[in-house]
Image (cartoon, rainbow, N blue to C red):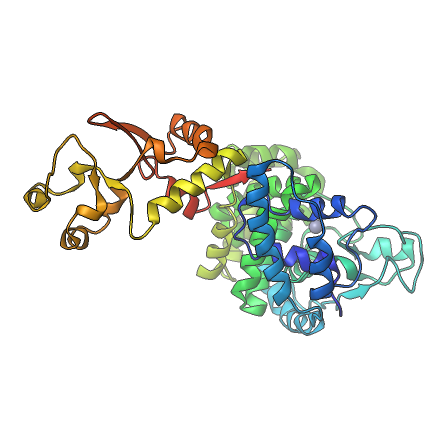
Length: 460
Ligand SMILES: [Zn+2]
């Protein structure tokens, strides 16, 4: 199949490495700039890049500078992106592995995966009821199949297909089908968003890796979550629920959730699911939280049965190291801190200057170890030392000495001064006095580290 322009842009953003946060906003920015073009057309590297390069840049000087850096990165990614995407081969491989996954994570025998279908619109070939819907995917269950006259299965709108997130969506939806079998009384529609969506997301990722062994897909869906989905309020509520499931799984692992699903299948209305979620979220052990959330009349019997089931499920599979890695990998998705563009730009400048080779700047004199100070001409405790005057042997002997670099305050260009001041006032860098010189110490507040680890990004 041929990717749409928005699908190609999304997957390029999901490679990560952008300054602006969240990078997913690029898509909205481009779409707004190209009034009347929603980027649903076919992707063609040359034509698409040409088109988006025509968008007008932000007005403000600092944000424009950062924007251009990111935009260049985005265009270079698009240049390497193939328009043709053979998603069917990935689907086939996943389908082959799904019965074993259903057994492992839900204890289901004989699970029959359905091959997802790529359609031009919903529900092409069946009815036009939702022809204008722009959903990412639609999973038709038994009840909907009867109602809509559309075969059961997962459908993707071609212009929404985005490599990595589409494969993940297939497994997310397959999890809902597994939940229907493992956790619900036959024919009953019972939806607990935090539990159903959270489990589908978490197990979906474990299954994605288990079925493809593709680290890049995991990497991409992680960035999808932190950079693209954050601009979608509905998806963000899934994330909140997913944390609750992660807490449940970290403590109870597979045996407990299987026991909980079994209890739900027997009687979904005996458990107060909201109470359960908030107790787990507050840090109560899930075993205790489940009993406290029971609203039926046979609490003792319920508790005994849950314990017995959990013990029995311990004889089956549990998470392996790979599962736990993926579980914890997606817990670390706090949004980064953001700086306003003038500050971010000053931060970039300071950190680039600090790494400049050969360095035209100074060193804190106290960084020179006492025994070596006699080798430095004119060493003084109260005067910054010009780096170019320090013997190379000392610089080599003391690794990391350059993290004590200081820049005279007056070298900061006029347009970055306000930003640098603000960075110092927030302690991202340190403003100091050595002798009668006022200097800035970029590593003092760890600024280059914070930028390097992407803890700090530029707001827009
Ligand atoms: Zn879902």
